[in-house]
Each structure stands twice: as C-alpha cells, then as structure tokens.
Length: 137
Image (cartoon, rainbow, N blue to C red; front, side, top):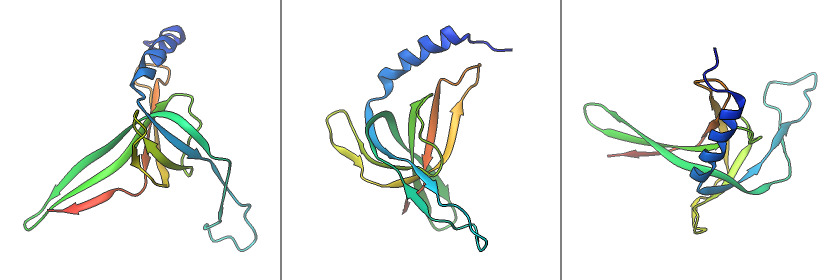
C-alpha cells in the first residue's frame, strides 16, 4: 500500500528543492567493453561534465573508540533530487555552497545510491561518495 500519491509526491519534491543549497559537477562514466581477458578491472570512459547540479552536501561523521584511540570518519554524502541521473561509478567534484565557496574539490566516485522511498514514490536520493577523511584523536 502506497501512502503517498504521485501528486502528493510531486508537491513534496518541489518543497524539498529549497533544501538543495549546494551545487556540484557530475561527470558520468561508462565502462569499456570487456574482452576475452577481462579480469573485472575494465577502464572507465568519462562523459561530458554537468556543472551546477543542485544538491545538499553533508559530511556524515562517525566515531570509533577502542582502548587507545578514537577515530573519526567523515563520509561525504549528497542528497539529490529523485530524478538526478547521477549513479554508482559517476564522479562528483566541485561541491560549492550558496556563496560559491568550494566545500569539496574532488573528484570522488559515487559508491552507494540510496533512494528514500519509505512511503511510496521516491522523493530524493542520498549518494555516498568514496574517499572519506579519517582522523585519529
């Protein structure tokens, strides 16, 4: 059972758009074709970069504690519109705030694409980027 109709989802998507206060550059990539000796490590072919894509950047911090150290890992994430074509394997770079200041230069590869569809239609997606910062305290 779907709790949200498509019309309600469209309205919520419009409202969520004001939260996308950052922009980024998306570089789509495709894999080269496999040959008889393919070992699974085919090369990527970059596409045309798309500049100024709206998003919400958030470096999620997690902490790990053991007997002698505390380690903080900042994992860069982007929340994007439901129809943003960025997907796993694409590159994200030049993440900027609303004043134009660079928050993360990159490029970083999209590692996880998690759509949020708790109540029916997908409203937005969260992209996890490979290349978090590790800091030992």
